[in-house]
Length: 300
Image (spheres, helix red, strand yellow):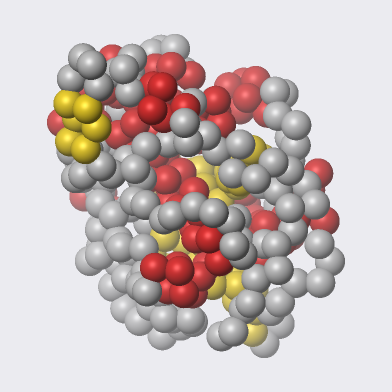
Protein backbone atom coordinates (compact mmCIF):
# COMPACT_ATOMS: atom_id res chain seq x y z
CA UNK A 1 0.00 0.00 0.00
CA UNK A 2 1.29 3.46 -0.85
CA UNK A 3 0.01 4.66 2.53
CA UNK A 4 3.23 3.21 3.98
CA UNK A 5 5.39 5.54 1.87
CA UNK A 6 5.94 9.28 2.31
CA UNK A 7 5.24 11.70 -0.52
CA UNK A 8 5.98 15.42 -0.18
CA UNK A 9 4.98 17.44 -3.24
CA UNK A 10 3.34 20.76 -2.37
CA UNK A 11 1.26 22.30 -5.14
CA UNK A 12 1.80 26.06 -5.43
CA UNK A 13 0.77 27.46 -8.79
CA UNK A 14 1.95 30.98 -7.92
CA UNK A 15 5.41 29.70 -7.01
CA UNK A 16 5.60 27.82 -10.31
CA UNK A 17 4.62 30.92 -12.28
CA UNK A 18 7.20 33.03 -10.45
CA UNK A 19 10.00 30.60 -11.30
CA UNK A 20 8.84 30.17 -14.87
CA UNK A 21 8.73 33.91 -15.48
CA UNK A 22 12.50 34.08 -14.93
CA UNK A 23 13.42 31.35 -17.43
CA UNK A 24 14.90 31.88 -20.91
CA UNK A 25 12.84 28.87 -22.04
CA UNK A 26 9.61 28.89 -19.98
CA UNK A 27 8.24 25.72 -21.59
CA UNK A 28 9.90 22.76 -23.28
CA UNK A 29 8.22 23.56 -26.59
CA UNK A 30 10.34 26.73 -26.75
CA UNK A 31 13.60 24.76 -26.80
CA UNK A 32 15.38 23.24 -29.82
CA UNK A 33 14.95 19.77 -28.32
CA UNK A 34 11.25 20.40 -27.79
CA UNK A 35 10.76 21.15 -31.49
CA UNK A 36 12.32 18.01 -32.95
CA UNK A 37 9.83 16.24 -35.22
CA UNK A 38 11.51 12.92 -35.97
CA UNK A 39 11.78 10.90 -32.76
CA UNK A 40 12.09 7.12 -32.27
CA UNK A 41 9.29 4.80 -31.20
CA UNK A 42 10.99 4.20 -27.87
CA UNK A 43 13.46 5.94 -25.59
CA UNK A 44 14.98 4.26 -22.53
CA UNK A 45 17.31 6.64 -20.70
CA UNK A 46 18.48 3.78 -18.48
CA UNK A 47 20.16 2.33 -21.59
CA UNK A 48 22.25 5.51 -21.72
CA UNK A 49 23.09 5.03 -18.04
CA UNK A 50 24.13 1.45 -18.79
CA UNK A 51 26.35 2.61 -21.66
CA UNK A 52 27.99 5.36 -19.63
CA UNK A 53 28.22 3.77 -16.18
CA UNK A 54 28.21 0.07 -16.97
CA UNK A 55 24.94 -0.36 -15.09
CA UNK A 56 21.69 1.25 -14.04
CA UNK A 57 21.37 4.23 -11.75
CA UNK A 58 20.54 2.40 -8.50
CA UNK A 59 17.14 2.51 -6.80
CA UNK A 60 16.80 5.27 -4.22
CA UNK A 61 14.72 5.42 -1.05
CA UNK A 62 13.64 8.70 0.53
CA UNK A 63 12.86 6.93 3.79
CA UNK A 64 10.28 8.49 6.07
CA UNK A 65 10.90 12.09 4.99
CA UNK A 66 8.62 13.83 2.48
CA UNK A 67 11.61 14.68 0.29
CA UNK A 68 10.36 13.21 -2.99
CA UNK A 69 10.81 16.46 -4.90
CA UNK A 70 14.56 16.31 -4.34
CA UNK A 71 14.72 12.65 -5.35
CA UNK A 72 12.71 13.11 -8.54
CA UNK A 73 14.79 16.16 -9.42
CA UNK A 74 18.14 14.50 -8.68
CA UNK A 75 17.27 11.45 -10.76
CA UNK A 76 16.15 13.56 -13.72
CA UNK A 77 19.42 15.48 -13.56
CA UNK A 78 21.41 12.25 -13.29
CA UNK A 79 19.80 10.88 -16.47
CA UNK A 80 20.54 14.18 -18.23
CA UNK A 81 24.17 13.92 -17.08
CA UNK A 82 24.43 10.42 -18.56
CA UNK A 83 23.10 11.61 -21.92
CA UNK A 84 25.53 14.53 -22.00
CA UNK A 85 28.44 12.19 -21.28
CA UNK A 86 27.20 9.84 -24.02
CA UNK A 87 27.45 12.60 -26.64
CA UNK A 88 30.91 13.66 -25.52
CA UNK A 89 30.40 16.39 -22.94
CA UNK A 90 33.48 16.60 -20.67
CA UNK A 91 31.93 15.57 -17.38
CA UNK A 92 31.77 12.55 -15.11
CA UNK A 93 28.73 10.89 -13.62
CA UNK A 94 28.16 11.13 -9.89
CA UNK A 95 25.28 10.27 -7.56
CA UNK A 96 23.71 13.53 -6.42
CA UNK A 97 23.06 14.66 -2.85
CA UNK A 98 19.30 14.96 -2.46
CA UNK A 99 19.47 16.64 0.95
CA UNK A 100 21.10 19.69 -0.62
CA UNK A 101 18.38 19.96 -3.29
CA UNK A 102 15.65 19.48 -0.69
CA UNK A 103 17.03 22.07 1.72
CA UNK A 104 17.88 24.59 -0.98
CA UNK A 105 14.46 24.33 -2.57
CA UNK A 106 12.64 24.84 0.70
CA UNK A 107 14.76 27.54 2.34
CA UNK A 108 17.03 29.39 -0.07
CA UNK A 109 14.39 29.39 -2.84
CA UNK A 110 11.12 28.90 -0.95
CA UNK A 111 12.02 31.23 1.89
CA UNK A 112 11.34 28.65 4.60
CA UNK A 113 7.62 29.26 4.55
CA UNK A 114 6.51 25.63 4.33
CA UNK A 115 5.42 23.88 7.52
CA UNK A 116 6.29 20.21 7.86
CA UNK A 117 7.84 18.15 5.08
CA UNK A 118 7.65 18.72 1.35
CA UNK A 119 8.61 21.13 -1.40
CA UNK A 120 7.55 22.55 -4.76
CA UNK A 121 8.99 21.10 -7.95
CA UNK A 122 9.69 24.54 -9.37
CA UNK A 123 11.69 25.46 -6.27
CA UNK A 124 13.93 22.42 -6.68
CA UNK A 125 14.45 23.25 -10.34
CA UNK A 126 15.24 26.85 -9.44
CA UNK A 127 17.75 25.79 -6.77
CA UNK A 128 19.58 23.62 -9.31
CA UNK A 129 19.68 26.48 -11.81
CA UNK A 130 20.65 29.28 -9.44
CA UNK A 131 22.82 27.39 -6.93
CA UNK A 132 23.75 24.03 -8.43
CA UNK A 133 24.25 20.48 -7.21
CA UNK A 134 26.63 18.45 -5.07
CA UNK A 135 27.69 14.86 -5.54
CA UNK A 136 27.72 12.26 -2.80
CA UNK A 137 31.23 12.96 -1.55
CA UNK A 138 33.02 14.16 1.54
CA UNK A 139 33.53 17.92 1.70
CA UNK A 140 35.77 19.96 3.94
CA UNK A 141 35.46 23.72 4.27
CA UNK A 142 37.10 26.20 6.61
CA UNK A 143 34.09 25.87 8.90
CA UNK A 144 33.26 22.16 8.93
CA UNK A 145 33.56 18.73 7.36
CA UNK A 146 30.57 17.09 5.67
CA UNK A 147 30.20 13.43 4.80
CA UNK A 148 27.45 13.32 2.18
CA UNK A 149 28.28 9.90 0.78
CA UNK A 150 25.08 8.34 2.13
CA UNK A 151 21.55 9.69 2.30
CA UNK A 152 20.59 10.79 5.80
CA UNK A 153 16.96 11.25 6.81
CA UNK A 154 17.97 13.27 9.86
CA UNK A 155 20.15 15.60 7.78
CA UNK A 156 17.34 15.94 5.26
CA UNK A 157 14.91 16.98 8.00
CA UNK A 158 17.40 19.30 9.68
CA UNK A 159 18.64 21.06 6.56
CA UNK A 160 15.08 21.17 5.27
CA UNK A 161 14.39 23.54 8.17
CA UNK A 162 17.62 25.56 8.26
CA UNK A 163 18.75 25.49 4.63
CA UNK A 164 22.00 24.47 2.99
CA UNK A 165 25.01 25.39 5.14
CA UNK A 166 26.46 28.67 3.88
CA UNK A 167 29.92 27.19 3.40
CA UNK A 168 28.55 24.51 1.05
CA UNK A 169 26.77 26.95 -1.23
CA UNK A 170 29.92 28.05 -3.13
CA UNK A 171 30.75 24.40 -3.77
CA UNK A 172 27.29 23.79 -5.22
CA UNK A 173 27.56 26.92 -7.37
CA UNK A 174 30.58 25.40 -9.06
CA UNK A 175 28.19 22.83 -10.58
CA UNK A 176 25.08 24.66 -11.81
CA UNK A 177 22.36 23.15 -13.94
CA UNK A 178 22.39 25.91 -16.52
CA UNK A 179 18.83 25.59 -17.79
CA UNK A 180 15.51 24.20 -16.68
CA UNK A 181 12.18 24.28 -18.50
CA UNK A 182 8.62 23.30 -17.73
CA UNK A 183 7.30 20.19 -19.47
CA UNK A 184 3.53 20.40 -19.66
CA UNK A 185 2.44 17.99 -22.44
CA UNK A 186 3.12 14.40 -23.39
CA UNK A 187 4.43 15.42 -26.81
CA UNK A 188 6.92 17.78 -25.19
CA UNK A 189 7.96 15.03 -22.80
CA UNK A 190 8.70 12.56 -25.59
CA UNK A 191 10.82 15.08 -27.47
CA UNK A 192 12.81 16.04 -24.40
CA UNK A 193 13.40 12.40 -23.50
CA UNK A 194 14.51 11.66 -27.07
CA UNK A 195 17.30 14.22 -26.63
CA UNK A 196 18.29 12.70 -23.31
CA UNK A 197 16.69 15.07 -20.81
CA UNK A 198 15.26 13.48 -17.66
CA UNK A 199 12.03 14.97 -16.32
CA UNK A 200 10.95 15.47 -12.71
CA UNK A 201 7.16 15.01 -12.66
CA UNK A 202 5.16 16.45 -9.76
CA UNK A 203 1.47 15.67 -9.50
CA UNK A 204 -1.37 14.38 -7.39
CA UNK A 205 -1.75 11.14 -9.36
CA UNK A 206 -1.39 7.80 -7.59
CA UNK A 207 -0.81 4.31 -8.97
CA UNK A 208 -1.24 0.66 -8.13
CA UNK A 209 1.82 -0.81 -6.47
CA UNK A 210 1.61 -3.92 -8.69
CA UNK A 211 2.83 -3.91 -12.29
CA UNK A 212 1.13 -5.99 -14.98
CA UNK A 213 2.90 -8.34 -17.41
CA UNK A 214 4.26 -5.35 -19.37
CA UNK A 215 5.41 -3.50 -16.28
CA UNK A 216 2.45 -1.10 -16.38
CA UNK A 217 0.85 0.18 -13.17
CA UNK A 218 -2.74 1.34 -13.29
CA UNK A 219 -3.65 4.84 -12.18
CA UNK A 220 -5.13 4.55 -8.70
CA UNK A 221 -5.75 6.96 -5.86
CA UNK A 222 -3.91 10.15 -5.13
CA UNK A 223 -0.25 10.81 -4.30
CA UNK A 224 1.14 14.29 -3.66
CA UNK A 225 4.38 13.11 -5.13
CA UNK A 226 7.36 13.79 -7.40
CA UNK A 227 8.92 11.06 -9.54
CA UNK A 228 11.19 10.87 -12.59
CA UNK A 229 10.01 10.28 -16.15
CA UNK A 230 12.89 8.56 -17.93
CA UNK A 231 11.56 6.86 -21.04
CA UNK A 232 8.67 6.12 -23.35
CA UNK A 233 7.49 3.18 -25.44
CA UNK A 234 5.05 3.02 -28.36
CA UNK A 235 3.52 -0.30 -29.28
CA UNK A 236 0.33 -1.30 -31.07
CA UNK A 237 -0.83 2.28 -31.33
CA UNK A 238 -0.56 2.78 -27.57
CA UNK A 239 1.99 4.93 -25.76
CA UNK A 240 3.51 4.57 -22.30
CA UNK A 241 6.03 6.38 -20.14
CA UNK A 242 8.45 4.88 -17.65
CA UNK A 243 8.46 6.45 -14.17
CA UNK A 244 11.18 5.90 -11.56
CA UNK A 245 9.98 6.21 -7.97
CA UNK A 246 11.92 6.95 -4.76
CA UNK A 247 10.51 4.28 -2.47
CA UNK A 248 13.31 1.75 -2.83
CA UNK A 249 13.74 -1.41 -4.88
CA UNK A 250 10.89 -3.48 -3.45
CA UNK A 251 7.91 -1.10 -3.17
CA UNK A 252 6.57 -2.03 -6.61
CA UNK A 253 6.07 -5.65 -7.63
CA UNK A 254 5.66 -7.53 -10.89
CA UNK A 255 7.62 -7.63 -14.18
CA UNK A 256 9.57 -4.44 -14.94
CA UNK A 257 8.50 -4.43 -18.59
CA UNK A 258 9.89 -3.00 -21.81
CA UNK A 259 13.60 -2.29 -21.95
CA UNK A 260 14.40 -4.09 -18.69
CA UNK A 261 14.59 -1.03 -16.42
CA UNK A 262 15.24 -1.21 -12.69
CA UNK A 263 12.78 -2.43 -10.06
CA UNK A 264 12.13 1.01 -8.51
CA UNK A 265 9.39 2.16 -10.89
CA UNK A 266 6.72 1.28 -13.42
CA UNK A 267 5.30 2.06 -16.84
CA UNK A 268 2.17 4.23 -17.06
CA UNK A 269 -0.26 5.01 -19.85
CA UNK A 270 0.53 8.17 -21.80
CA UNK A 271 -2.90 9.65 -21.13
CA UNK A 272 -2.32 9.41 -17.40
CA UNK A 273 1.10 11.03 -17.65
CA UNK A 274 -0.38 13.78 -19.79
CA UNK A 275 -2.75 14.64 -16.95
CA UNK A 276 0.19 14.68 -14.51
CA UNK A 277 2.15 17.05 -16.71
CA UNK A 278 -0.92 19.28 -17.07
CA UNK A 279 -0.56 20.11 -13.36
CA UNK A 280 2.35 22.29 -14.56
CA UNK A 281 5.05 21.45 -12.04
CA UNK A 282 7.24 19.11 -14.10
CA UNK A 283 10.76 20.06 -15.21
CA UNK A 284 13.56 19.03 -17.57
CA UNK A 285 17.20 19.90 -16.91
CA UNK A 286 20.22 20.77 -19.03
CA UNK A 287 23.76 21.81 -18.17
CA UNK A 288 24.24 23.04 -21.74
CA UNK A 289 22.57 26.37 -22.42
CA UNK A 290 19.47 26.13 -24.54
CA UNK A 291 18.52 22.41 -24.45
CA UNK A 292 20.13 21.44 -27.77
CA UNK A 293 18.65 18.51 -29.64
CA UNK A 294 21.10 15.66 -29.13
CA UNK A 295 21.64 12.74 -31.47
CA UNK A 296 21.59 9.71 -29.21
CA UNK A 297 21.88 6.15 -30.41
CA UNK A 298 18.75 4.28 -29.37
CA UNK A 299 19.73 0.68 -29.96
CA UNK A 300 17.02 -1.34 -28.21
